[in-house]
Image (cartoon, rainbow, N blue to C red; front, top):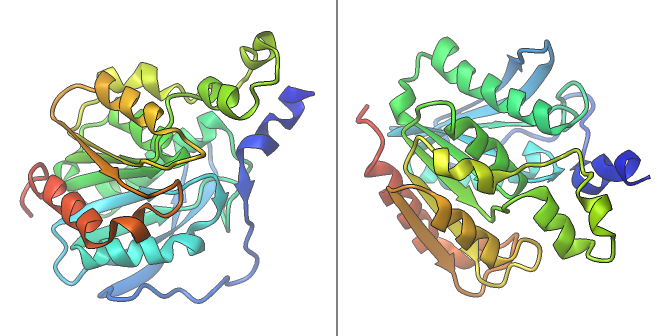
Length: 259
């Protein structure tokens, strides 16, 4: 029964039919919809917003609920800090084809990375992978295989079994060990091939702060830690304010290649 319901306990996509909500990113020099093709033949929907004078190209991997339209305010803040931003909807989310799975999300992330490199001619050394919550697993997976300029992971968890123990502690251990979705970021971060910035709210009730610290401690240098006092899981940007964006921009500028 758990295996049958596992996907429903992890993914909460919001589908979009037709044109979708208005495509608006405040402060962007240009905004366009893009379509990516994955290695297994699915069409993935994305939005690319360019800053007036972008110094780096950031791929935004969002969390497990909603779709990319819910994150356009995040995109606007990043564009305002000088990033060109590509945000995608995983398979089964928004306008994208298919149904979500761990392997599928990794393939979607790779399609986004390939899009910037092959279709836009972006130097990988100026690419930033930004993963939030569930999206952190995608960014970490990519950063263990591809060379990029920098990695930012926010509200990241160590692995799906650890998350299940936090939120479904009443289930027997043998059941938890049978989960098909691993998302085992803790096992992967020692192999990161990019400088990494960890961001976490100290009042996160969904992904405990301790998980972010464990990932940070297991990661190689260079690495940085940004703890946001008073922030929970979904309000790091709101609580962090200008300091949040200042630290993010400073970290990336220290590591990405000059345009």
